[in-house]
Figure (cartoon, rainbow, N blue to C red):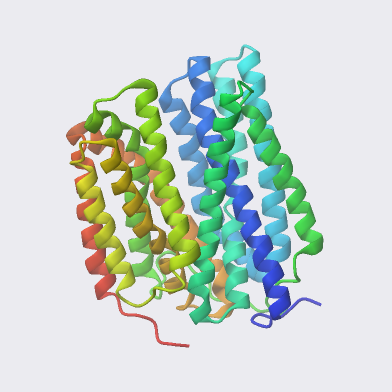
Length: 404
């Protein structure tokens, strides 16, 4: 018989949290491997950057709609089977995506066939993958009281970042060995599919609603989380702008091109990701309070302002490390704020909404960033810093939830 909401035992919770973190590591690895591999193969095929952007952009659009629905399904059916189905489907789609890249790089095909096939597979991966985080976050809410959720949410985000880093390092290692980079997607797809199947058997029987229970449907316009949603969208858009424009900033501020630009861009990316992991895995459970979010916005804004004026590679790496350190606090804090504003029966739903608006921010940020960078160059980072300053004021003015 399934657990009722909020009755997960300590031993069961520890096992479930370990599986949840592992699921996000695998998911993150597949995401970064796909983001890195697709442009490389498209360039080999002579296809434009805009076509690659189309594949990723439309896949993100599917996540915007699917994440809330899959989050609600995890409330209704339980975390175990929703997480298993989402991770299994994500693994299959990722494996097929790698196979398609391998096939198209070896066999002539029209641009329409390439884009349509890869878009379909990324939509499947993005659509089903968007249910992984809400299921994991919902399980955290099932298993821990509100005061404990912030640290656990941070560690979930750290697991995702670890996966992103692992995927990028795997692609780099394969490239250094002169192996086909598509092999990374094939391997990750197999691991994700097998792990998804295993979860159906070994994941703790997760919380689900009693028969006939129908919790209130949560949307981005829900008055309980509306301000949090707006802050989240703006933050993720700013974060995406920073990540997507990093290569351009390095080239412009350091006057570098080619391999040297790639080297320093890679160092900046690694510094930002490692710093975020440090915040999420170790610091966020020790540093909390109402001022944490405004301070995180102010510190990251100051670091981005400094990055827009940096003149050496070491300065840029340092600025991005500080930015990542501050950014690491933001999403887990926002997720925890949203979680404490809804009932236990709505935890998957609210996590789905947060995943949905994050996907929207990830779609808007690079587009906006590209336009801004074309217009003002490195000053785009200063404008992102100004936006973070506004978010600091919004976070400071936002009324905290009552203690439960």
